[in-house]
Length: 481
Image (cartoon, rainbow, N blue to C red):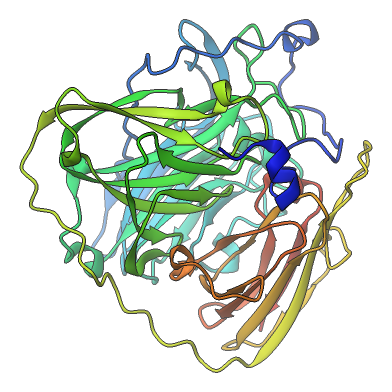
């Protein structure tokens, strides 16, 4: 198990440990007396894990699927017997999954019935600037707008979330996030687990007060209740056969190290931008905020009646008793299993010859204080400034360095999926051999990546996807023209 003390030595521990001291006024009022009395840790494995709801189109045309989504506040039971105030898409927590197909357009009409401006970003998608969910391109309370997603990219497990500047961190924390699964013929034709055996698992953390309300404080040390698909520490009944588990880290700050309690294998088959070239067998996976990793777990190794716990081995915020266990798999039946994991999953095109190289530095104030900020290349985010000018069609190598001595970051680019070339001067691990849009960058570390900008012209963001950090200004703008 990786503890906070060990992680401080590796640069990973400070994610969300409150080094900045920065905070913004919460959107929802919290009773200070109740907020000072955190809720007790819920009972482990007492609640079944809900499957993610699937959003149904309002109507379809020959080329597009049209959806209607309303952002609205609701009260729902998360902790047993308690109603919690949430910000939601269509009343769902997390938001319902949109299932899309490469080459078929999705149009989403978003209505804002909240009391705060929002901006919907489809994380990992290649879309026009007008549909990217820019932090300053917001939807006011009472307004509505259309977001059009052409889906001209290959399959990928994407997700959507709020991105309105300075409030994106709290809006996502309070519930404005959901999944978007894009598939294609490449994925369809593989004998991977499908249907009921292809399961989404979204993991995040939260801080509840004694009244069961979410407490939002920037860099909060008390987000020590883990939620899986919106409920704390659930169990999930499985058959003794192979499952595809699509993990996404929906947390604002928390890094996750996922492993099975008996040390059994996880076969990683995909990352942010879809299938890896080849499967990668490992004992654990690391997910930073915003990252997605798909694994296949073969539960036929267990007998009916067996139970195995999904553990978190990255403990930097909270105790092992609070955050060391995520959920439990209960093997309850046998089932036929025609699925398999082939030795080759996809062929990625050869990287083009790079046309330019850039050095990007990420940093935040480590000394604390109410006015601590985050920086890209020494500058806090200014929506009126272009930080990187890129020629349309260029393929660039970016060397992204975390200049902090303790605080880890991760790096997300809008518009493009990139390839990781090096981590700390060494080739990437097999789990990072596919297409990525979000990548971990530990304190003092440099990650080299290559991205090709040949889909759309316009202005797009790159930033730390630890959302408390981006809310503090660790974002920049690239202009492709």
